[in-house]
Length: 265
Image (tube, rainbow, N blue to C red; front, side, top):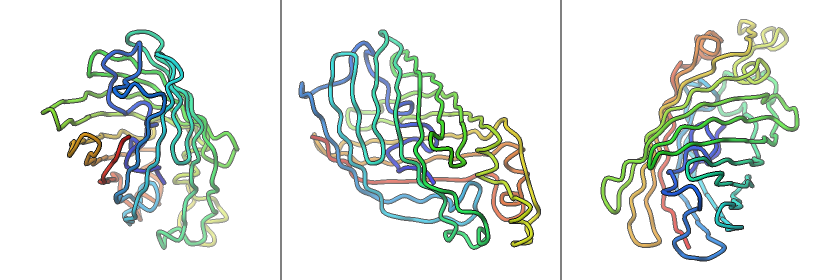
């Protein structure tokens, strides 16, 4: 499961957020050390990676940013804490700890009999290069508790289009790669599970996981209020798509959408 509409469909929020106008300092229009935002809305996502069953649920986002210095900022949100550095006028880096919820097998009947995927904590590390409103970046996500989420790497690129003083759209693409542990946790079928469920056993190796296209929209309703929406389409590589969970019972491309109101102060 992913972690809310205010983040990328796959990448950490630190990579996909709109570009900084000048990366040798972090945007701080208020001049305050602390900045806060509250978001609430709804999101729709697949029950598991590659599932053709979708679930809709309300979403809540609480975030605080603390300006440590012109080039360092602490960021705290529900289930995540991280530090951002502006390394130079064009380069920035992040390191974060994130709570990653496990898979709810009850969300899709096909998962009955599968092993439970436990909640875990991931370490996230990213590096980003900006040219004005265009960026390229790379990120790593590592399961720190060893609960099956393994290691995932991303490369990404995107651009923020400022269509009007009130409306901006961030368009991005990322390509992900993962180790065998992660891939098999997502779509593997062990011999024991195969005997219980009748689904063909499947084990994959490490390699290319997927390509994701993202669109994030922000419309400023008032100085403190914004309407935000996100759309992501993830297309899985051959190793993932060959799993019976996707090939026989799911779909090779998943869509995630979310929309809500955000208040910043």
